[in-house]
Length: 296
Image (tube, rainbow, N blue to C red):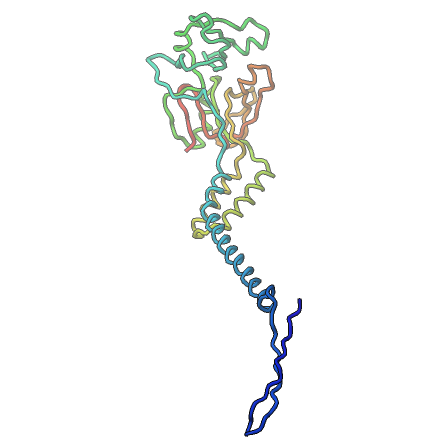
């Protein structure tokens, strides 16, 4: 409703002893519903509405920046760490004189070497004996299963999952032991596969992005770049139990490089294709005859 105009009645005032008409004045009267001018009421809240979110955004950006600085190291460590598979049979043991394995720690599926390569098919079959199988004889169809007593297994059989000591060795020593000393004994090797090119590129790109945004000294950043580079050279972590496949023309060299043929005894025991190629440079641990050799 438009404001009402109220006109004052004609008034007179005396100027220099004469009566002079006074010009009537017009007064605007606002209605009850009308507030201050539209320009003032609209503009001021708009200004406040813009300022408050900007302040909040700045605070949020600051918090996010702090979180990024806090979490980048965790993100980087998660990127380069190995997902090592569970190995429930692996155990350190204490043995009595002339014993080669701890019978109490064996289970169905444990591999033995006597020096024939054996596998347990049924532990404590009749509370006195354990059923074992010679895999080589079994493959050729020869009667290969027999019962062995606890004492015979404990005193004459090694298992690749048990060790009484750990030795730290170089890559050259590790390769020499695997190719020259293990022989036909069943051993356990832990190694990394050759990396997939696409996975390698993704890991390198992600790691570089994390380090570029990290607020750390350049010297420390250079060390982490080196760790990232070393990590992308390695593929998936694997554990395999078996033995080297040898042939008449196989040349054994005193080197820590090259590929070897390795027969996975666990796959062989269930009739699957078991021959594998392992890069000696990727082996990080070797366990046989009660000693675990680990790469320094």
